[in-house]
Amino acid sequence: MVRRTGVHERLLRYYEQQGLLAPERLESGYRIYSESDIETVRRIRCLLAAGLPTSMIARVLPCIQAEGERLVPVCSDLAAELSQESERITRAIEKLQASRAILNTVIAAAPPSGHQKNETASVDHDQSRLTGS
Image 1 (spheres, helix red, strand yellow):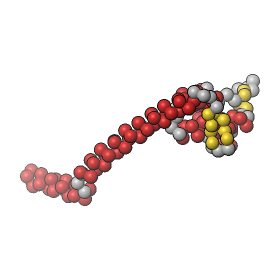
Image 2: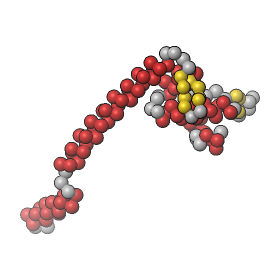
Image 3: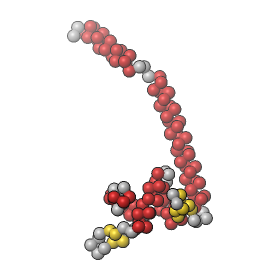
Image 4: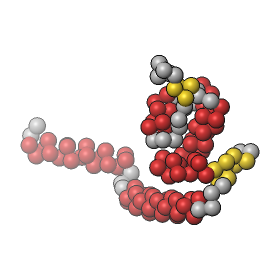
């Protein structure tokens, strides 16, 4: 399964704990993954890349089907939930953009790095001259 999906074994266990994946189990506890499990992992990865949390993915997985490379909702109320998630992601992006703008303002106001070193060296030199060291 790790080779076929590119997903590390620990993530597969996590998906299982979250109720996203339910492979067949042998009496020994060994997991048997089907082709549909492989497709489920691909869908999970796609939805994670879209920014959905695993709690939402657990609700979405039973309500989507693949049409070629696209995932298409088949439950009537799913589109509204996904729209809310899209709005949440948009708000998060806006907050990140505002944070980046503030950070860029701080960076632009900083003295050039070469200038800062010279100031430090000058202060050290002045202090040693005053103390006689």
